[in-house]
Image (cartoon, rainbow, N blue to C red; front, side, top):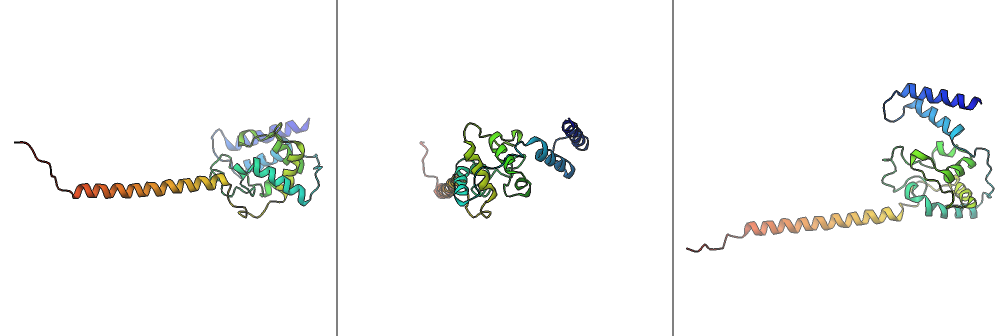
Length: 194
């Protein structure tokens, strides 16, 4: 019974400090919101990970992560090579951050399963099995060094295509300028009937 009252007071405090304006939360708001997320909103806090913490489960978790999560979180879970990660509101979470790593394993699994509504994080319930989600949690606990896996292929391909178009556009612009110069350099040669 105390929990809803504490939550209501905390939300009221955030609204009082934030006023009715839109924008990024300040330090106090961010602290209160983070506390609410960690202690109230995100379920699974007491759920224990049944998957052993070993190389095989981490490897399998990495494979599931690469298949389902790399488009937003990058191959390394730290947004490497994801061009929109910091442009989102809120930004895509860096899974190596202290804020994320402080979640209990059960909370991380809960987030994977249910998503976080307004953040853009989808829920994978009904798509991934429990065992797969728990293995992904193992991978999140053992992320590789930032940037060590490079950018996801889709963004590499996009960058290569963009570069090719820029190169073609530059060559076409160059040819167009050459054609204009050639046309301008030609004397006016048609004759008028008399």
